[in-house]
Amino acid sequence: MTHAIIIPLFNKAAYITQTLNSLIRQSKLPDELVIVDDLSTDDSLSIVNDYLRNHILAFGNCRIQVIELTENKGPGNARNIGFAATNCELVSFLDADDEYHPRLLEVAAHAFEVHQLDFMVLNIAFMPGNNIYPDLEPLKKYLQPLDVDLFLIKDPLMAVSAPHFIMGVGSNVITRSKWIAANRYEAEVQLNEGIDFWYRVLKSILNEVPGKIALQTGAYLYVNEVSGSLSRKKYSHFKQIELPPIISRYINSKDKHDRLLMGMIGERWYKHALQNLSSNSQKIKFLWHYRSYLTKYIGYLLIKR
Image 1 (tube, rainbow, N blue to C red):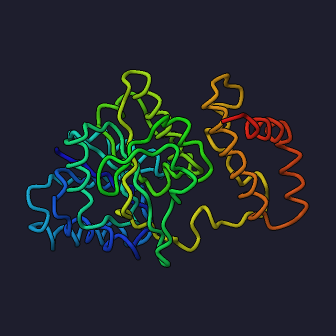
Image 2: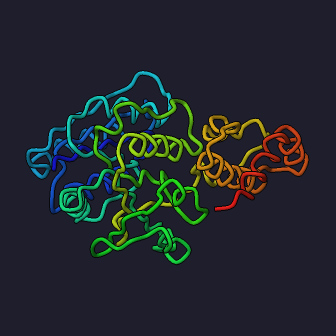
Image 3: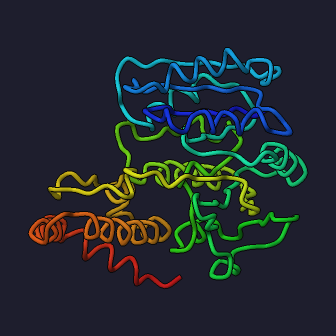
């Protein structure tokens, strides 16, 4: 199966060479590579251009595009633009500071062909430390073995809202391109925008067909825990913390799965805010400002699974 990879690039000069190295090491090379530079202010773009000039033969017949944006609108917008430039059966987004295992594209193509998958979530090895997520034990009721390190996800909308599940972190999804056509990332949003996007894609699949949704374990995606990343960012004022799109989208939804996901994301969001706000006064202001959301998400956490 043909496979397109989209890399949103913004100020990742220290990592992008490793990311591209992981692609030319693939046992099955990508068919398309689209790199979308979101107006980087470091040497990221020049590093990419130099790398491609020096390693072009290593990419074989892969069609490569580098798109240079003239306005910075965030990774979601860059991913949307990159996807619009692709024409493959499978698509995945690779963050510019992460890496693929050398056999990932081969393993994914085999799984999609043999098991007729629609959507694959990858487990993650966080680097450094090689901590593997998710822990399969709390999720075993949702998992049915299909192949080595490959599980069919039963009741996927329930599974993805489970606290131990990880979807949309580190762009850890591969899907058939046709399922993305009606969905786009929220532009200029950077907090849980991946979870929001992939949940909508997943729902669109399940609304149209029964869909075969799988979890590929085996740690084929390496995610670097970068100093200064959004998850580690410190805030001096509570209004600097974005409202995740999932919360604003589903706060009043009547759908059980939407409410479960909103509850799980709401809990993470509140914990993120309280851990990263720099003063107790700002924490109190945050809680007061979002008090109506607090009661909602607690209520959603109590919904019986």
